[in-house]
Length: 81
Ligand code: SF4
Image 1 (cartoon, protein in one colour):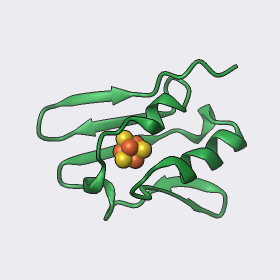
Image 2: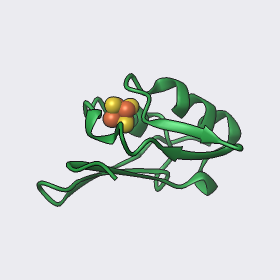
Image 3: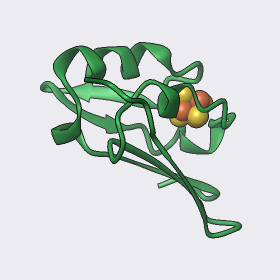
């Protein structure tokens, strides 16, 4: 968990191609794959630029960015079929 940012990802809400694109889309490599399970690199979470690319490209409930310093939460919202 980062000091300022904590990111939750729920793989059950992602197709395998959405999982792959999450790994590739983040400019600071926060999402990592370990034995086909997606997670986050806790050492990298505070590098999040809040670009929202991961949120724009993942279905509702799949990704949540929690800002520890403001109690604000940003959530994914793409309308994937
Ligand atoms: S908001 Fe941008 S930098 Fe932060 S986790 Fe998502 S893709 Fe990565």
